[in-house]
Amino acid sequence: MYKVLITYLVAINLLGIIVTVADKKKAIKGKHRIPELDLWIIALLGGSLGTYIAMKIVRHKTKHKNFMIGIPIIIIIQLVTSILAYIFLGWN
Image 1 (cartoon, rainbow, N blue to C red):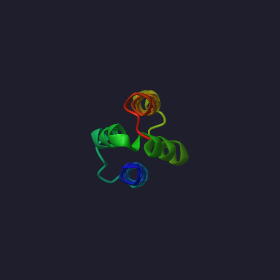
Image 2 (tube, rainbow, N blue to C red; image 1 turned 30 degrees about the horizontal axis):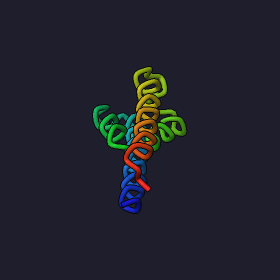
Image 3 (spheres, one colour; image 1 turned 135 degrees about the horizontal axis):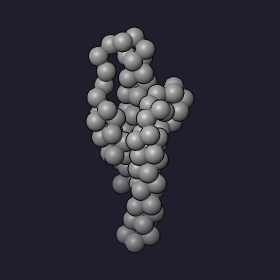
Image 4 (cartoon, rainbow, N blue to C red; image 1 turned 30 degrees about the vertical axis):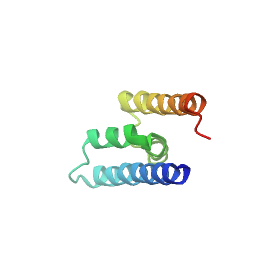
């Protein structure tokens, strides 16, 4: 169970990084952009940490308060729910 979960989390966070960096490159080149909804969905599906790290490294969406506040809130919610699930569901 853990291997599947860890593999999923690594994959979704890599996807968050890749999509964020790709959108930044498209923004620089003036090309068709990746919809913000796609970035939010990836973050909500577990890729919030990867998305946030990429945002900070490539300075993408850092002027958007909804991203700079929303993504860390998602990270905190995901962390808290994971800890609670571990405690109450006994994932050991």
